[in-house]
Length: 92
Image 1 (cartoon, helix red, strand yellow):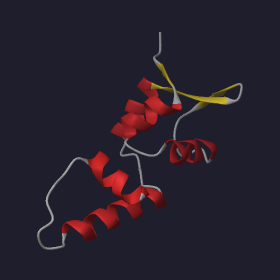
Image 2 (cartoon, one colour; image 1 turned 30 degrees about the vertical axis):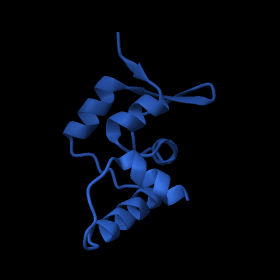
Image 3 (cartoon, helix red, strand yellow; image 1 turned 90 degrees about the vertical axis):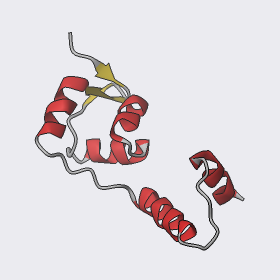
Image 4 (cartoon, one colour; image 1 turned 180 degrees about the horizontal axis):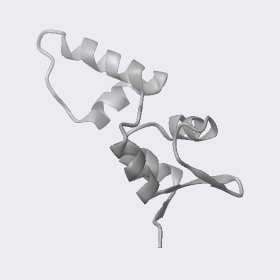
């Protein structure tokens, strides 16, 4: 029996934002099935899609976070810290 995954489970697996995943599913860029109002993803189809060299560009939000992190880490005296601390700092 195929393993069905939710948006949140699939987003964690692919390391992308859930909204980015929904957008890619709507565009047909990711193998997905809509059950009622919810997207579902078959793990085996995702694995095959990834094996074929799937294109997973990060969302603009993801790129913005990466750019901010790189900029801050380039500052003298900056230390590595847990990502949760970094996100909390951004929200201030």
